[in-house]
Image (cartoon, rainbow over all chains, first blue to last red; front, side, top):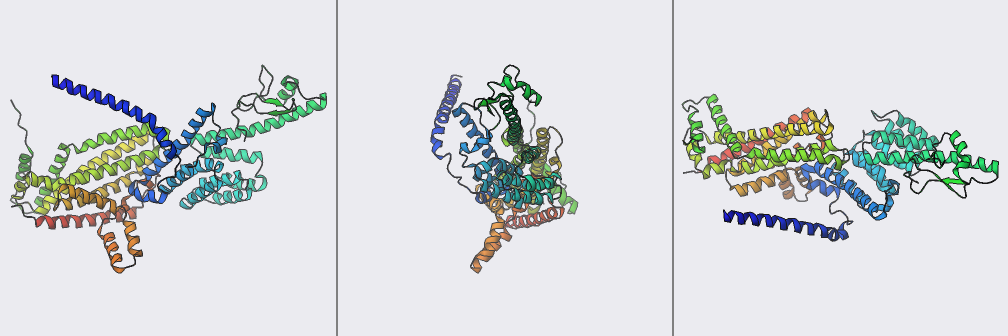
Length: 303
Length: 287
């Protein structure tokens, strides 16, 4: 009995020591891994595919989750160090050097896995447009009947302001069986008015509907907010210009133009009379009341 | 009062005596083989081989609960990849580690002498052992398949078309496991369990690189090298024919003709393996 108690004590003490040492290792591992965290991947896609033989689907899932964790980890780190919410329009500040190879390995392991192409189409153009186009072309070669990939490729060309190429890609995608009718309509629109806000709004709307990824949907929602805000600011500028023409000076506060803003059907903050942007943050007057801009605290992306 | 518990030797002797060894009919041969297969299955269950299902279930439950958040809406694909890969991996481990002991354990315990002293052909003994382990694997794979289907229904909070579409892939996994079991049985007839396990594992790995062997055979400079690689390609089982997990996760179902040819290939290969195992086993002297 006494011997058993002693053995039990050894087990408990041993486990306690294991926990303490694990804590110590965890605390110091980050420092040890920091210099190599951004090193190139050891395996390229083709090698990884060979090594994982029957399990390449599972390996692709692992690389996919690793890609998401990589971006997520960078965003968390950014928010911790910048004391604020990260804006997806500011991806280039994250230094996502490993994302292109991670997505490349994922899609090489499982070329029919559509989610990484979609993610790449939305995230990669901010970092490397050529890489994004190359990834999507690879996806189209592996999945020639997937109209969604044409949609994502067209989106990248549109972002690049290459409206003619975007139009051609949408036209090619529209010919595929099962492609929605709006693909052909978007192709025509790209050709006629690729740079317009309405074309952009339509593009984002279809991107939102085609995606199941919450991060993509959030990004698209914000871009639609940005477009709405641009329209609102045009209206506000018009009101401010009219006020200046009538009074001979710029508005000293929002109250000066509150009536006109209400007439223009803009949302108004009841206490200050300031018009509200799509994230319900008041706009601010700039240039001594002659112009309008987004507030510093707004959730509407600036670009 | 102590309760009588039959040991393994008693069970085998009972099984053999139940066979009615006074007839040479085909039906009797089948009954003998089935009796040995049933006994091999019982032994696997007694050895707690099916306990791997508990680990599998825990893996699926954890996957179904946590992978949704990590995979950004790709739960179904991840569940199928995870479930079918685990099914193949666990199955291969069972096929190898139980398969290599099928004959060796009987020799070690000397129960083989009791069986072979009866009018049971060695080929019947091997076939029975093989079928017994295949039955164990079938039960394992079926339960795992149902588990993956239930996990799919759980993550989708309702019906998922993948629930039906994964079954051809599960069938091919089972067929692959039958080949691996045959390989393990062949090695176990002339080698120690450790070496047999190692060799079977090598065959499993190389079997998935068959396409590379063929490419090497076609591109090799010397005639000897070309023949060597071609011989390996045709001699070793082409297990890549059964690797459809990745495509199954996207809902692709193999063509019926391709499926039938893959199964026919497996049957032919298994027949060769069992015949070779019988040939070796017949030549062994157990006196």
